[in-house]
Image (cartoon, rainbow, N blue to C red; front, side, top):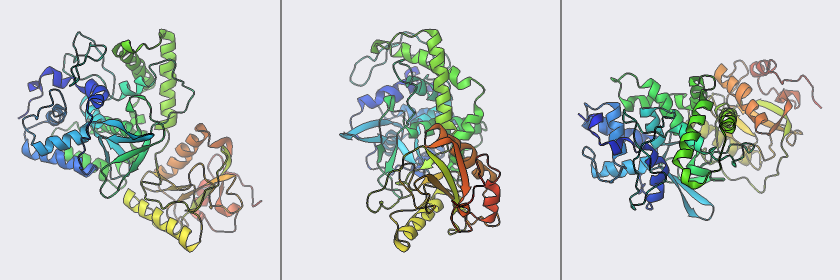
Length: 485
């Protein structure tokens, strides 16, 4: 049996080092052609559970981390192939491929269609997401032999490493020159293949310390899984399987469920502690001096922004992940914020989809019908709502749609997958749109605070969005009875 206290102290304290510094020292691509999906990761866990039947969850996670810790030797209990795969899965870094082209490594494609960084998942699963910071006189050296500042990194008395999700989030706000007025933008990206994903290319600007959407997904999943993994008789692989492969998957609701874990003011408190830790840790980088009063204010505002712009906003599956065909021609741009939202149902497909695979297939089917049969430039809707817990990007926030004739320039078209003539989507799916997506759209500046909601039938001669769904939206706060213009 692998005992947790059998590991040297420098292995049990490597989370800071692995997350912040190891990527700087590793120049080669650790992925080496591995298929980077969640099944690959779960398969590795299953193998370890089979070969190490008496090991605890903690033992298995520590064994994996030891494979990428100095002195980078293969630990007993892992084959060479398992070490290679572990490095591909756990070494999280963002690397420049060429000018303005960035690849994120150490991430996997989950069955729910989202991308998850494995290292923060395992770290949060084992040690939790909160800041735990104590400083002693230890030195941390990279494989090139250089000290990293400050050299004051050591484990707590119980051997836990000290930087996890809250610390990583805090580091983005550690410098008072970082503007809190700018929207939070955690980069997402596209896989080279959905069936056999190997490389993940980021889209958009790269933020400091590689704080990507995949990293946050992993940290939140780990925090939630930690609470579920209290029963030591349950296999970790079984828990991962049920978390990511349900219909709908629990992982689809990671933002809401993590928000449910938070006590009032807790996130601000952790960011406050994390900024203090980060500033001490990164003291030689000449961060600007900051008063305690300003620090408290920054932490409070940062927590508020993260909740409003991430936790309260449902995830949107981008076009590349549902494998959209290109837009035909050049899109006409919208001019947000817009004043109207038009609610639709797809009618066909008539069955609500409850998995990424089914919802993606429905999206491709609708796009094919709109582009080929109707001769449109693209799928008509701005966004489409699956019953898997996700919205799917159609023409999105910036392209004029083809959803509500005569009104495409002034509003967004949101369609629920299914025929909702005699029934409505499940309450948590309705809530996803009514209470989270539309609220987030206001916060993000895409729709006006006094926007109006109407059913498709109110402005075009049609039965859409179905009798039952139309009756439902008449109770929504921004619904208006205005008839056809």
